[in-house]
Amino acid sequence: MTDGVRHDGALRVAALDCGTNSLRLLVADADPAHGTLIDVERTMEIVRLGQGVDATGRLAPEALERTLSALARFAAVIVASGAGPIRMVATSATRDAANSADFLAGVRAVLGIDPEVLSGDEEARLSFLGATAEFSDALAEPPYLVVDIGGGSTEFVLGDHGTVTEAVSVDIGCVRMTERHLRDDPPTRAQILAARADVAAALDIVRAKIDVESARTLIGLAGSVTTVAALALGLPGYDPNLIHHARVSAGQVREITRDLLRQSRAERGRLAVMHPGRVDVIGGGAMILEALMTAFGFPQVLASEHDILDGIAWSLVDRENR
Image (tube, rainbow, N blue to C red; front, side, top):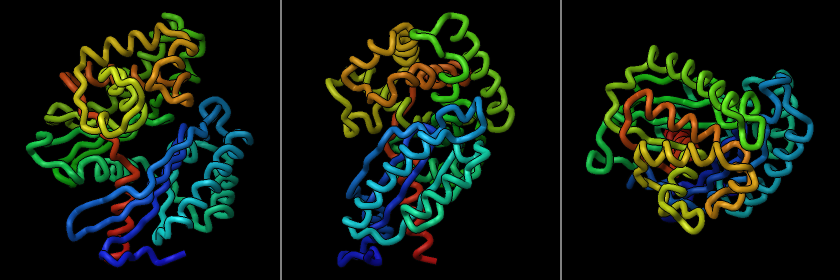
């Protein structure tokens, strides 16, 4: 493997993020002198590592197998790209699981490095960095509230131009809400109400810990938000270039959430922008987005395709420059 330094002065880095629902890879050329991060490869597989963790407290053997198999494919991409510095982080599912050591050992065997099991605060900081590194006041008015809706947890980060002022991570996510409450197809009214109560309690924690009312721009990250944005845009297929920095109104989010929760999984699966791995959990993710926009009074959300992966990539540049 090369050292990752390219002739043009950029550093080719590899960032991996393993969450409750997905495993994602970004290989990028980072140029701190010009503040640019240019994608070489950005890919994702739905591995559902957090399958059943909320109920059992353990990572399921089949979930571990899916995740490590996908990781082996990503490792081949990294080697072929000539990326140098590599960092892999793991989030909610591995924080919660009693057998997380099995996951850590498997990653070490496949990738040759130890994954970092992030605290909620560090996860939030990297998400904020990745989402806002390219922002100017002309694009979005600060302070920013960055919300990263994951499978098992959701991070809320308040800050301004790369500086985090407050952050909190709460245990609501699209997989967790689906497994805990939204079990029927489509979910019943009672299940939806129970999920909404869970989300509302988590949002009370957020409000108590950070000054959400001071934020001027809501920035939404991860697949639940970008899928809702794709639906609001009426795209014929999922197109990250059109979704990135799209603005979606609270009314659109409310309508899309209502429709998703009324549809069967088969109906959601036929939506042109829907990733097959999100079909069963998108209703829970959209519900979280709708609830936070309503609770905190945001008239719109700015969707971002740049997130914790980009933050991990920039953190590798910082390490190399120390």
